[in-house]
Structures are given as structure tokens and as C-alpha cells.
Image (cartoon, rainbow over all chains, first blue to last red; front, side):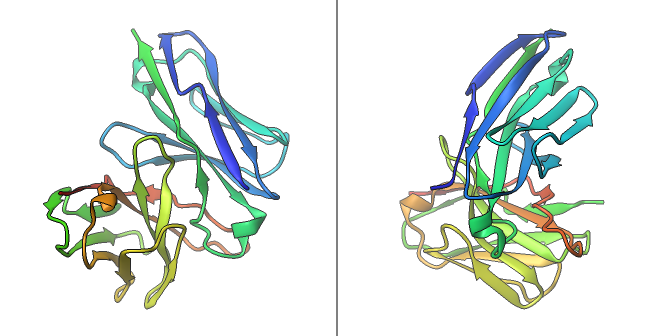
Length: 115
Length: 116
């Protein structure tokens, strides 16, 4: 069964304290891994797409990396405005031919950055 | 540019009542989706549409119906609401890109629905 597990569930950082969020996955053939940011009371905001092991994407203080078993979202020198819940989702070979929206989402990591 | 707009933002229903959630997008996207988000669970796909006049079932379609009569609108209906349908509902859209399955890119801010 395809699964996505995000850790930790919650992470508290001081402003400027770099860290990483983890997304481990077990899928029958990865067809894409996606990162989203979700602010309280808002819908998810699309951040990155990764397709193959070794691939990296960057946006401001965020950098996403991918291996054959997991993805990391590295946050460098975070600011309070980076506080949000970060969601990881995957598309597997099983649902590749069907809905492109039928992603398997993790439960998210709630990041809090204190000034 | 409004993006994806959902109405209403909040609603309380009694068991057995019906209602329709409206999603509108102004980006001319081909694909639209309805998700539900429950505490302690990841987002789950209810129904989706790959174009005007087409709809299909997602992971958790039971108890819901959808329609996409116009490209910019995607409606989610609850014919007979049940407490298990208490959730936050998100609509999303994405463009068509030849040779690539683009993931849901733009989400609305959700409809918070409580069924008593």
C-alpha cells in the first residue's frame, strides 16, 4: 500500500536556526513528489515538484531534495513568516494513469519560527 | 486576479439536508479538483474534472456528486448530509501541459462545513 509519512509532526525553531523536514514514502513507482505550504485557514500553496532521485529545487530559503526513499525540505535561516504547515504528496504508478489530482498526501509538519 | 474562489466559507447543516459548494477559477485551467481535509489525515481527493462536461471519482466519492457545466466552475453537492461529512473542503485547479501530469497548483481557501 502506498504511504507517505512526514516527520516531525511539529517543529519549533528560532529565527535563523536552519533545519530540515522529512517526507518518507513507500509507493509502487514514484511519478512525482510535491511540496506545499499551508497557512492557517488557507488552502495549500504549491512549492515544488521533484521527479527523480538526486533532483533539487530551491525557492528563497527553501530547498527540496529527493532520494529513492525520502525527500527533505531544508529551511535555511528561517524567518517568522516561514511559519506554516508543510505538506508532502506523492503520485505513484498505480494512480498515474488515472486522476492527476489523486495524490497521496502526508499529514504535514507544522513549523513555528520564533523571533 | 482572484485565482480559485470558494463559496460559502462556512456552513452548518443538519443531518439529511442538502447543499452545494461552488468553486470558481479565473485562470482558464482545464483541471479542477475537490478535496477534503480532516484532522490527523492528509488531504483526500473526492472528485475531479479534466475538462468542461467531464467528471470522475477520486479516493472518497461516496455521498458526493459534482458537475462542471462551465469550464470555470466546479460544483460539489451533498444530497443528504451526514456527520461524517463534517470537514474542510478545498477546491483546486491546474493547467494542462502536454506530456506532463501537472499536480494541483492553485487551491481555494476552503469551505468549513459542519453537519449536526
